Length: 273
Image (tube, rainbow, N blue to C red; front, side):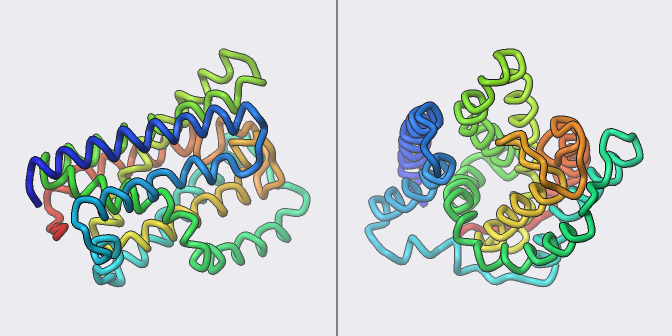
């Protein structure tokens, strides 16, 4: 990949993704339109695909993130990482008495188990984000800056991209509550990035990262509640900003993994050609 071309199209990708992503976040959330998050999170895929086509002038470039082989280690990590993080948050919530089992927890547990194969089928929803961040941006920055630095940069970009949606969505709870929630979730997104980067680097196939993304979204909501809507019809009930996998308890466990992953990244052989 030509270094100048890499830099040019990477910067254009970030510029267009943020511009249209932030505008759609602001307009759709303020208007109360349904599906606002889906539209906003489709922007990374859209502009990664556009600039791949412009740069390489070939449809083959679009499918590069799908062509890498998967292995057993990457498949196991895809399933176990989100499930273990959510399970640890659940146990900590019960032990610290910040959460309690709901009355119908056994029925919800059966439903949660069913969400695991469903998440595999619905991977295309996660692909809207993962294709842009881990399928396009991460390998390009790895080539320019090296793995450790690229991973941190992608984490910052990914967290910042969510800012307007998270902040505006929670303004109805008050300005300080919105600030607190936004900072907490942006920190969590940054730390969570290490898990997605680690999975992608194990297999270099963006489909696995997409499945893990949807698996996390589905199971976390079912077990610990919906942070975006601040609602709980979940297995564990409690202070959602404390116990949820995308809030304080989640931040604790994803940070621990981030430290471990960061130390291992230098030993992972990765090629993005």
